[in-house]
Image (cartoon, rainbow, N blue to C red):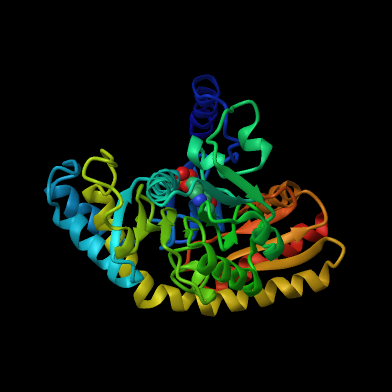
Length: 396
Ligand SMILES: Cc1ncc(COP(=O)(O)O)c(C=O)c1O
């Protein structure tokens, strides 16, 4: 019965959707903590976490409670109203990040679009017209975001894109120095690239960025959509360096599984937009904000400490795996619970082996296995993963 329903769902998906997703062969019946169950009863360990979204795991009781309470009051009202859930969440977000101004969105790419409008307007006021972005970067699927990215897989045959953007080599102080000038409006970057293969910038690069900002007065925009929300052991990944960007973009984990994003910025940029120059129907809806409040509380209370403890343990275990399989694992990289295994072969192959071990992961940058589990995972769950990884690497 279940298997007939399963087949039927696969068929309907195939016949009704635009076929842009390569889905895993799993029809989910429920998810809890760091686990997902297929309709056939198989239990999987989830080290993908909704692509770095489910920071508190699946079905967290406090999230369910927040949804229940808020949904009994109201769901959506629009930004014409003062809404307690939205306002208290925003206050908590600005206080815990030390960014005093916020605009709430629904997604990462929407945060990127808003930031582009903000920096373009600031640039027009200050006679600056060029944005610098980086090879390997990922900022989303809308046109502004794609304009900041170089990889043909996301862009080919879909131009024209925004003008006034220069894409340069990631993490190269020399290229940065050559690219910026008095007309540079902003430098737009991930301090730890996710889709780019879990690679980060060096302290030397950040020093050069700050030196050039001092000289040319441009804005620094940190895309923390994937690496933020405590995932690297600090609230934002740029906090591992001595820098405070002018604009910070978040989403993914912020809503704990509901669509929510934010553009955070300083008092200096608070008045760049006039009333009605930006807006959104759903951004900052009460339900997502009620959940966002729980997420922030949990991250600040205990979850970030778990990332530090478990992240260190996980990294060490992955290094042991690398030592065991030196021809197959080239490097272990990343911070906290945003880790990557650089492989000497296509990561897709390992992903499929891991699936046979009932472990869910994904691949980025062709040969990197990306590990972005829920931030509440335990040492025992890391051990299960490592056992499965060892078995998978043995059989490849
Ligand atoms: C760094 C970064 N920025 C932006 C985005 C786009 O976010 P969304 O898919 O919510 O639009 C992503 C998504 O993976 C991301 O990793």
